[in-house]
Image 1 (cartoon, rainbow, N blue to C red):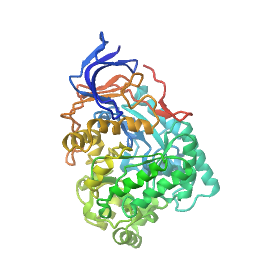
Image 2: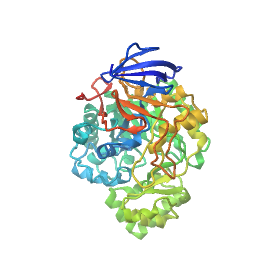
Image 3: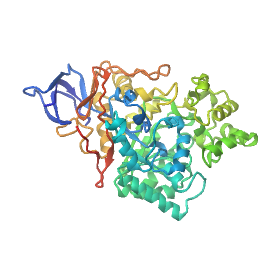
Image 4: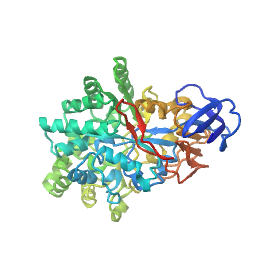
Length: 535
């Protein structure tokens, strides 16, 4: 054996009772599990009662460029994350032509940085996944990564950034782009239906694209049209259109935010239960925090965002148009702000693109004119925390049987949301050990086995013989998120070992130089697997 782990508390990802056993690893897979494995291995690790679980799956990640930029990627590796799902919220970097890529880079600079430090030499989904596999001199990436075809980028590529219906020819081009991305290995399709240009798509247009996703055995992952006013209607729209398309549905960062939704999580869960009872294939993810995180520009009404980033800046420079934007935000409730009039006291600047504007980070926006000046000065790059969530909703949703974990972690900015560095240990420390919202076995299943099942990974997400040795060992008595709103990049405690493909990426609590991650691609038969790797 390459490795024998002795005396671990095996929490196997199924939700079943934990048990004590030895676990042996050979050639990147779990070779044996027994009360006592005779003999040893090239390496023996005494678990000393540590919990041994499948590696955690971040079902909603924004590491699209971070994995290429930073070989260490300790933000996720140190949490026990062994697989991230990228291409979220309908906006990422493939498929795209040169013009589309330039606009998308600008539109999501607040999520991933401007990208001028990454050679974006790909234009297809397959090219991007190849780039992940060949990153850092061919050594690979820090953790495994799957990808969703971003519907907003597809629409920008085929239609542009205008608020209008797609022509039949444009719709057919979008179908082909989605199909190509899925054929090249994407696990599904995402949307950002409060972000341009994806939000300009009708339900009928989305249904047609979901039919393509269904043919390839993928799933649809929408950031739906509202988490505020009529949030339940927005959830219901996603269920209805995927039911019509025959497509699996995974609801991104599913929550009920803003004042009108306080205490209403049971209504959302009842909606899900009815859909599940009717045979719908529905799952969701959430993060264990109350504030949200997005870009400041995302709050603007859709008409102000039409035409792409340069058109937005031109509108903001014009006083009369800027006044229309203010009225939409503060009086009407802009669709970019989920139909709810903005409460500026809830908006905290978490990051800026221009270092000269760093003094704004950590401050609350004190009104529209301040927001307008910052958007213009930083060319739409500022990111924000939006303090609009409700703890009782967070707890209710994480208990649901189809729940999985997703950090929605934006790694950019001087003061990012602590979820980027803390989501998974925060579940285990705060919501399992301290509050007892979930049992340890239930929580691990949410963070591993259930997510792997959604991704249709036949050999990940469980501690079972033959499964890949993507594993995390943690101390249930001490595991905790180190990240806070004041120190958002502090690493977690109580997670001394993380393995990917049987290789230690965290050993004795320290990041090694191992780059064991690769792309995980949907196969023609619907299951997902890694590209072959040289060991």
